[in-house]
Amino acid sequence: MENKIKNFTDLIVWQRGHRLVIDIYKTTLNFPKDEKFGLIDQLRRASISYTSNIAEGFGRDKPNDKSHFYTMALGSLYEIQNQLIISRDLEYVNSKQCNIMIDECIEISKMCNALIKKVKNFT
Image 1 (cartoon, rainbow, N blue to C red):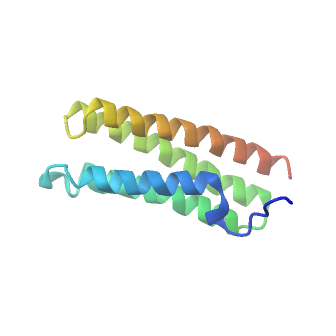
Image 2 (cartoon, one colour; image 1 turned 30 degrees about the vertical axis):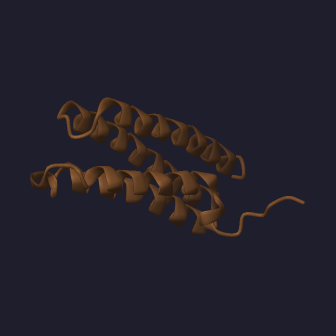
């Protein structure tokens, strides 16, 4: 029997993004306090934006609307990667931890691209 996707939380691209949000929140707890309105805020917002856009896209009826929000989510993943590189270069996060999160962003982006292509095929 096939598992039917009933909610955005059933999407693996959302689930993995949610885990990334949690990882980013935990990682940014160790950032300098003067980054509260800088990299901490930017990383957290971008990660939440990813999962929020997946959720909003899921709730849309038209394939073009869905792909629009999924594409916006994809952009947030690239923001996260950029901000992680900056965080690594400022030595707020170690290279190993940074690379793990960047690799996860890359894997999630591949899944998100596949979702976008699938949705566009319904137009």
